[in-house]
Image 1: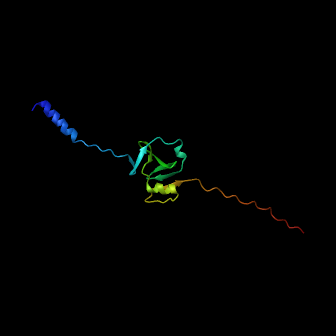
Image 2: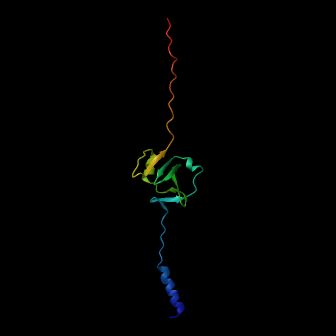
Image 3: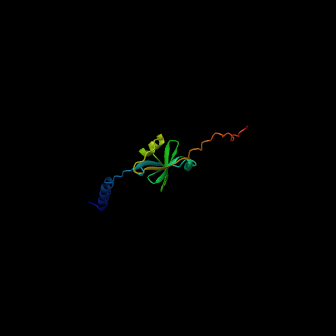
Length: 118
């Protein structure tokens, strides 16, 4: 067997033994897709999920990661509940809901004090 033939066989065996699997990117265990966020994303409703703010924009939950902005393709149940308006916490997953305080109620105008006439 020639040296060239040994090298070819060795390369062929090495190449066929390689298997690569690609896993989708995940944040806090949930599948995300990296994407540019909508303009002014930080002005939208947000909650703290898994230690980071998550912003609800047009039905998608965006979060900032070390690799850039991403939205959850697999929406965590706690964020789904918030989207439906039923906020709950499980192990502190959703906390610190930021929303405007209720508007002050207008008081009805009080009549002037009564004056006694004789």
